[in-house]
Length: 90
Image (cartoon, rainbow, N blue to C red):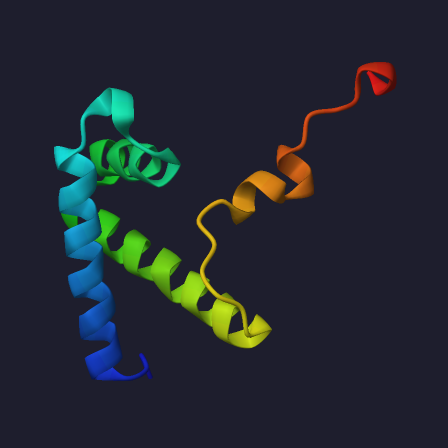
């Protein structure tokens, strides 16, 4: 099974909107997600990019529901893999 048809439709519609926003964004002002989308679009094409965006949105939604958290666009900046090493630990 592929899950709820209506939910899948909403995720694809949201992905279309996100893709169009990324394509229309000024390259110098594009955020991290938009840069990823534009690069993926160049490599994989329109339809595969839509599915990848919808998948990313579904994973974000699942994580928010599972952890009972609100959306935080800057959460990735606090992740340990994105922290710079201290000067003495190099």
